[in-house]
Length: 599
Figure 1 (cartoon, rainbow, N blue to C red):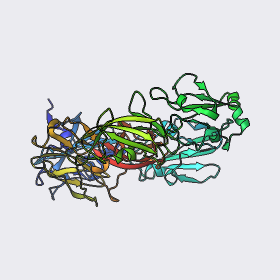
Figure 2: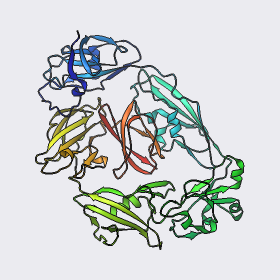
Figure 3: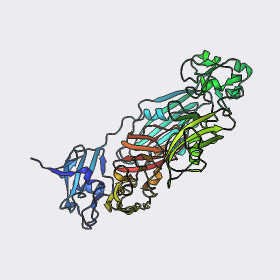
Figure 4: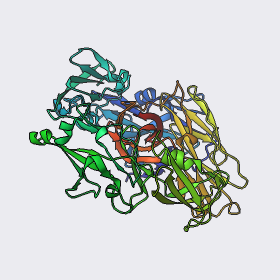
């Protein structure tokens, strides 16, 4: 009867609870421990050791004769010794050094792939669109929805460089990485050709898809340059109505019907555009300023949609059922802001300016004249004059001096943070050993975790040593959980995690922090291979690679705006607000970071 070894593969990898001694056996792979072939040929133990670069860090006399290869049964190593196998025999095997002095680092799992060349990459031949005159279309989502990602691991360049874009009116083919707006096109015919390496870096397979964009016969209708308004205003909006990019004439306006759609449903009510009454468009419980314009020649075509517009208010308006502030940025796009909720101070202080700069006036001119007044009581009788808020509950009124009867009330809680973590990072200059340091706190305990490298020593101290090979992984990232003594804090389990969250108060509530606070080693030598494209993008982009990732995306103020623990590479991601975003993607214990600009 076969004996099952008790060693579990997860314990053999980067375990945060093991403190390896530098004199013990420590097996690593300097190259990716994943080997592929287009031919179901025989591969020997010696082949695997050579291709993966397997060796013992602490044995200068290390030799292939010291190793054996075993069959895996799930996550358990069996006693079935293998000497040579076909690629199709096993999805992975375990290579172990015999007479190892450390059972935890005495071997490594190697993955085997039999490559099946693709027969197509796209599920359709053509993407077709109809746009308004002069308008453009972003075809990113449809492109990747019809795109089947294939990777043999043989490609030497990023997918950005292997997607070739041609505007057929010009005829010049170029990688999409050269033009940041490749996925936004107007009227015309475009060809996109994708190149992938199959059995070796020069064995290419190509597939193409066409994008055809026609213009609609519908006339383009829009409101432009309309200033922000107070909720009690009555105003003439006709000077801001444009038809096919020219100011609408009296004859044009006579063929337009203006409808109040602020009830967010139903047929709406018609109104006179010369005297649009904002008190009918907006109240503080159920309505939002949304208007619709129906243009008779467009309606007669039977294929045109009515034009909708949301005026920008000078004072932000909260949805009655939530803390969401619905408004528009200076690009004309709808934006949801939040102000109510919990905030965390630095050194027990929180600046009032943060609310306006980050949560109200993040884009120029949006609520530019809004005043925020702070009170310590709900009755608004005790004003708070100090610019820094200490921990506590505050009530904020938003007003504008141009509006006589217009305000919004917000409620915020300012909380303590136990401490701020400032990380150091070691420069990655190639294969070798790197040291990471966490802050020192009296009586604290430390538990490290590493992606992309092997922890050598110090994982129970404030200083960690990691072995890193840039050919095995593009970068190494580490995190450390610091457990403080009970006398210092009473938070949940007394634990403070440095990687993504900081525990912030006595109840264990957590605040997401800027990804830049986490430690990462990324340089020109061992830079992240993760790519986002197009970058910059218009709301939608995708991440290159293969397989699934655990993806988290943070905005420029450190808020988590997107998460998907099973994100499939090349799948489109949509981020509505413009700005700079930091993407963290983790796969097989390796974490990578890329910055994306949404325009």
